[in-house]
Image 1 (cartoon, helix red, strand yellow):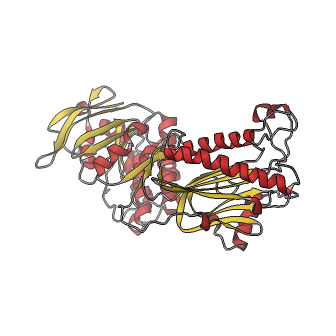
Image 2: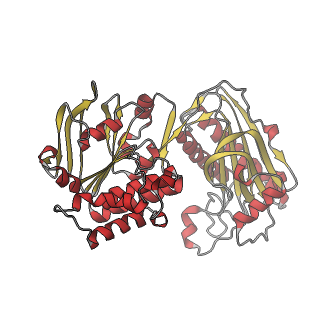
Length: 488
């Protein structure tokens, strides 16, 4: 569809240097780069609005210069960054200008196909209600949608768009880009669009081209371009990159400048055992990964709760119930991680372990009445839910994502070892138990102090987790047995 080969150019002096890329039918290419990197200039060179000093642009395997103006306009529609104001025109009249390349003869006539194209473009961009309003009476975002409709009404196979989401709120940004994506896929057209928003470009584009001072810094699929080191170098700012929660696309997060702050460690004395809950509350949020009932997964939370519930606890909507319980205790649900246990929390084992990197605190409550051997769980249709080993690992250190995951693995292995040392059996099979049906684990870190990239058993952090989880799990199991009247 579009091939750009070593194009260079600008105004008084070259701004864009030796840029090459291709866009196939059914694809969206996003152009990214800092202010002044040449994004809009590149689009003008590709569209022919600026003459290139060198290089070549081909559309459908023909040099762009070989097309007559109207013929080119039927092949390519352009939405500049600052569309010309259509003073005195209604919205429908402005959109209808997109049909000019399709008018033929000295006395051009408006055809049914023209009317249908205009109305379809207005419906797609949701500007039909403004059809007979003057365009100058609309907001900036509404005007932008009108000019996008004008480009769509042109029904060209190639769209060149300079910041099409400019002035749009997030709902209309999504609506417009969803529409463009569907239009590209169903009509087999191609889009080249300039973006300021890296995340939108990554989410909706098939390929990205990143400019730095007029030259290509990176070009490829979003996962190849939206990379932490690349973006930090080009934009000269701190940021992080992680996977989108739904789509297989990377997303960028800006990081504020690092500032000196007082260290706020977690201590064993901060973990409070109340009548029916174990609670840790810190004014500075901890980064947490957990399998908790409330707010599982990764996040930042001020309050961590291991809540004791009756063995008869049976609630249809557990999430809503625990949120309401949190509110009654003046814990903010969005800032709280909560586990549930039927075990008496007074039997919790809580210990603090000093380390060269800082320290860690471990808390375990253990109910083993329905302990099971996970390798034999498939033999049982329904497993009783009561009986839980809940574990906290609270680290005074700065953990990487990998360290969080490895810490969870290390803690799980240590819990299994503790069960073996305490000779806890699966009563259904008579084999050593590996846990209970509803075990829950929290790993939290202050994200202050020393960087800890790993949490496996070969590291100091992993070694302390292994020792601490075994110690605390064994102690909690013995407390449970004692409360049940069993011998240790």
